[in-house]
Image (cartoon, rainbow, N blue to C red; front, side, top):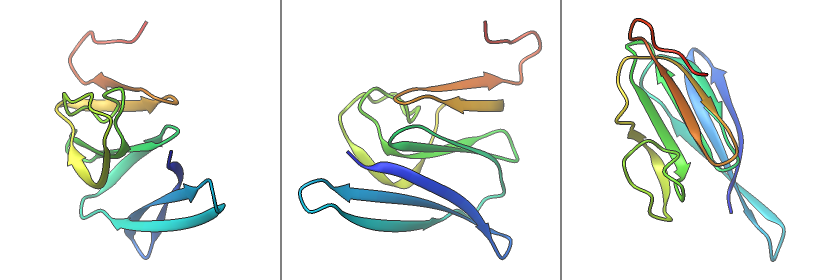
Length: 112
């Protein structure tokens, strides 16, 4: 299973870096993905990254076995390019190992 390594800001451009680990040969391959939006927050789980952009939308990529990318799919698939999450008007996002929680900016919305 691929592991998320990091995300970084380089020369005012946001990159998300995903490291794929080949268990049999213990080799690592880094994939640098350029994001063309202003990312205000990025969170990662074990194998996925979610980036919240300035207009309240979010994009995600990585492993989606349990639907953690927010695309309505729970297929055991791996997205190498950022996909648009279906959740809208978010003000916060948090990721666990294999899940993602979005907090909408709707008045009165909260997470218990």
